[in-house]
Length: 260
Image 1 (tube, rainbow, N blue to C red):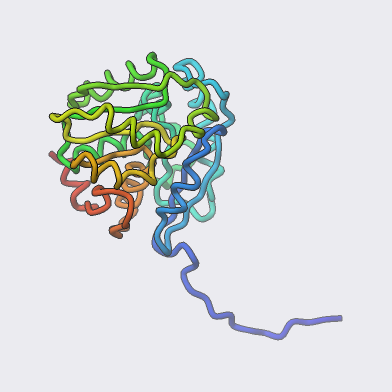
Image 2: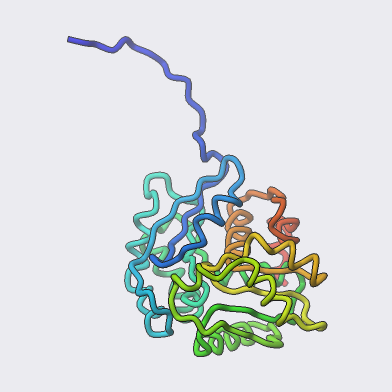
């Protein structure tokens, strides 16, 4: 018979001692995971689960995400208890509404701070002082119209919104970063204070700084804004290089923008 000797292991606070962030993704999202692991600083844990979703993005299919949101939140490391859990779908956040998503996340994970992509986008734009914006998306126009109305109702001046009229998440993830750069510069307007590239399933993160340099203004993407806001809400103020001007803004900046 084997018997282990009594030992006192050396222990610390674990690999994710600074913060734990949870994200609820569509099953068809091809971009978010790569993006978030590029951005995650040391000591920050990223935990991901996925909603079973149809690969056809319309207002009707997006509205069904709410049905399993609480269950998805409950599955995100319940023993580790993520500091923030965010629903990682821009258009779905708009169609289902921030408040309904927050309620569903808290039903499944009452210990967390609930977030959505579109909440992070608003936080980012307000923190950067950008009210006049242009928006590029992969979406059908029925979703573009809903997004423009949503942001207008929250005080933003949408100068234009242009979509690629794609309907599947697989297609969203196949558009090249170079195309997103060209598209962003095409839709930009001199009076726009920021360019917003909307959708977590697109490969725009890697060209943010190239677009900012060419356009001379801030660029917001869904994945960048969502992750920045989640980090700041969890108390992590790292300035991350390579992902745009937004990461120069701190938690204090975010909270000040929410109080204005």
